Image (cartoon, rainbow, N blue to C red; front, side, top):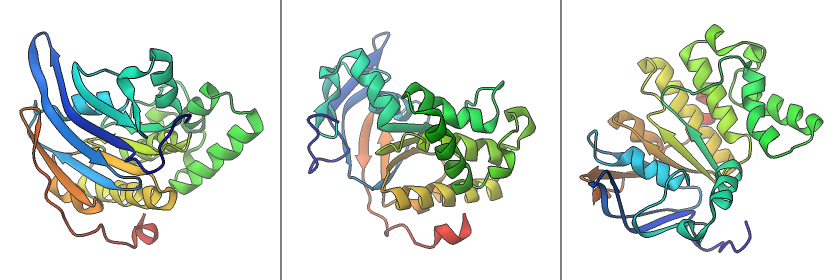
Length: 241
């Protein structure tokens, strides 16, 4: 990205505020995510977690405060520049997968590469690599309606990784999965983030999910209430994913 400061955190918020219909959602929020760092964001419903993810992904803009991606102020970007940021530098995984129902697994993963104008042969090679990395090569031609929840989330993760993002945003990525499948998805997220050096900001209500993260931030009423350090996320996820 032009003007990128390689010494800056990948994401940095200072004094961030946001209201909807005159209702404060974020109130002076400050946090940063280092390159390659995995951070969990926890808090009760309505505390502003998902609203912050929308700001971090360039979907929305703050009312006040500073939000920088790779040292660039998002509020100073045009809507086109923020859209380009979402396509090239930020990947998102959702609780309910958000796969396109009429497209196969391969076609869903290919969508962001099409938007970037990647040549057909390169797109297909990249899709094969991603489906293999996320363990769903055997579902390449399946529609979402033909997949299990775990398979859909693996495909959604492959799609999010397609443009090789520097930051992965995950909004309750295991919230719609059973506990065993959720554990496997967490191991996979940890594994691919480590291998690619991708930073992770994950919203979760599940304390067990924070095991893959380096830090846990707690939110209440639109602010970070504490940022307790936890032990560095354990290794070996590659072998278990």
